[in-house]
Length: 109
Image (cartoon, rainbow, N blue to C red; front, side):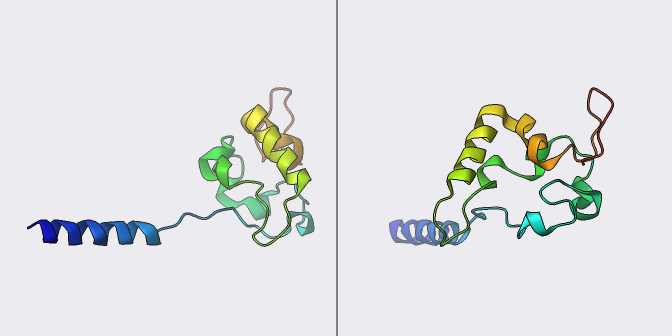
């Protein structure tokens, strides 16, 4: 009986080890897109006009250095800004994402 339990636990642990979450969100070179790093409706699909960025884009997966590259001080600074300001920091680089802001502007550009 103990051997069966041990085998079952081993199998469960093995299955858990194979499951990996992505280490970063990869969208290619955003600067090359039609809006640069600013979001545009044609590229943001169902995310356009959504106010909660972190609902689809977990903080831990954002602004990471691509695998096999040297750590970027610029990306480290962006990660620090996101940690300090949270979602409010998104619009400074990526625009309003089609969400109306308090002063009546918006549109994401």
